[in-house]
Image (cartoon, helix red, strand yellow):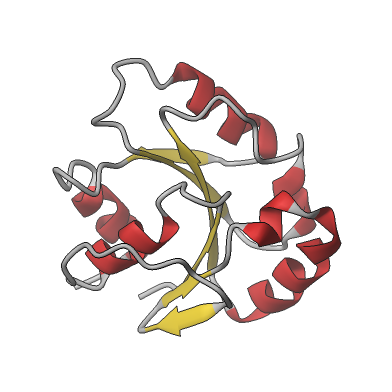
Length: 141
């Protein structure tokens, strides 16, 4: 299975996705530092919200196979600068989270594409919609 690094602003659903991928129940927990569990590397939202942390993200990404950029479907603030994914020598996927909250995710999709995501996965931590597609991509058993 591929190691996945999750990057997104605070509240974008990184920890919820990690909990679902690791077959754990949902429970809110503010990620304070980079956390690694099984094949998921969960980063604090502050690492994308402050450009001074970008070097930490590129350094940590060395041990990962895939970079997952997360954008909440209901978020209006663009977290990623255009071309952000080019900082990594890894495949970049986009994950649109919280798809159960809105009907139209086109803004989130466009944001992720502009950031460099080559493949987009819609996902809801509440309904688990899209979870199997992500697991299939990562070849999770």
